[in-house]
Length: 169
Image 1 (cartoon, rainbow, N blue to C red):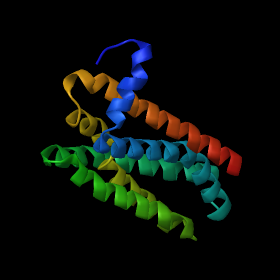
Image 2: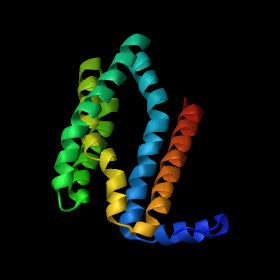
Image 3: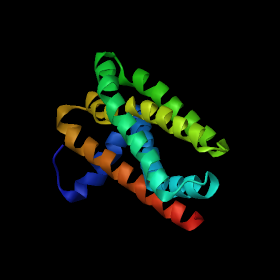
Image 4: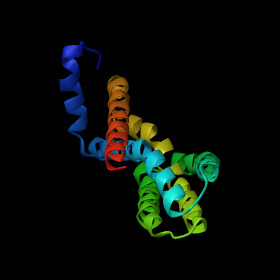
């Protein structure tokens, strides 16, 4: 719904009162935290614990992004055929979480790189589905505000992740 800036908090609260939108915004916020912290934490882990040169760490990030890009096209086709995108997203979230939980236990670069690739494949089933999931769960007049809430949640997560990694590093 269109309205003045003073009406936005009420409109956003109405959107966030819906359990499915709460869940997806939680996913988006968590993704933002990971994006905000991932670069710092990943580089420190790869260079200090695994002994990679910064250039090699950059190649690891590049491999993860290329995997995500390559898998996203296929994953998007799978999710477009699903009756409920949440059923496609949940295994992707579980894959990402398991990869993130296992990564700190890697003692050599190879399993760390493999976990990054697995996480990227899981991510390909999640993030490209976020906006379509939101649009599937709101009415036409609510779409612009629902997507704005999504962006605010992700950006807030990025700030929290970057700030926390900076404090802890």
